Length: 130
Image (cartoon, rainbow, N blue to C red; front, side, top):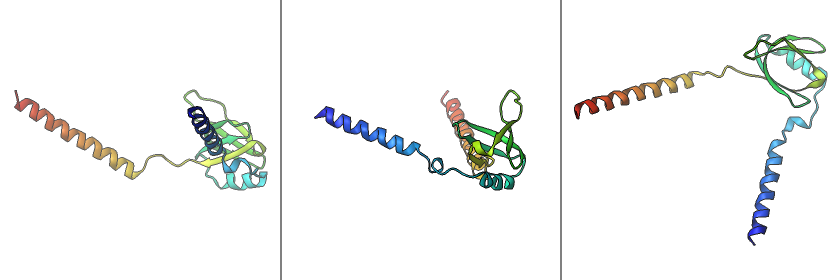
């Protein structure tokens, strides 16, 4: 009975992972006109997340958009030459927004302030006991 239950649980986990890994955009190929229209509306110099049809992903800076494809400048520690990606090989193109926000900055400031306050209180109590 334990083996049967274990087998059912394993199959359920494998099936659910396979279903979650399939993305909706994978089944619908986009035309060159679609990608050209979308890419031409993105601001040059913006950071984009790109996935090609061979499954490679990269984050890069959008440099050039023309009728045949896009040219990207990869974001890497070591400078790399610009890469040209034809629209036929493009599977996903997503504009990445700046990761910082006002709420995040406020939360970090509050955490630092609270940590400093409790550190000072702990220091005062530690010196008072001596």
